[in-house]
Length: 209
Image: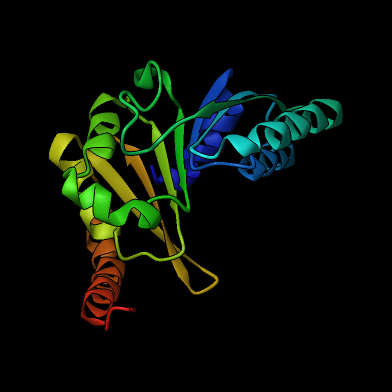
């Protein structure tokens, strides 16, 4: 089953639904998930944890949580904030094996050098701990890290990948599975090569001084 189809099924079958949103301040992804759940008619209770290094997001997250609570029509969201450094906080979150969805929002490229120096340690740990069918959403300003991150995921488990082209950017969705689809593996090669090309171009560009 494709990860995107699986997300829809998860929303209709899983409650509570635990989301860990890394770099997720101010919490707008929680709004999107609740709207999506309402759209597909999912009576789901999200436990949405925003992890961000910027403590200033606390008030905004609390405000969004209050608005979502007042506006719920079917889906419900319990929104919380935890200060976290993606690289140095170990473990990244408590009980990662109970998380249904990890979101990495505009945080990987900002920490690209530190991720590579640490051999992608923080991601490697959550990939290794993730439960079967857990979904990972990678949303960033560039797709050049996706080949490396996918390689790390598959070094510790079996992961299906879907690449979504939106607004001139390639987003990556991973799902932990028992068996990887041969068809999906063939389809991912084209977009992976695009991401690799972007990475090579970035590495070859002149450094700003």
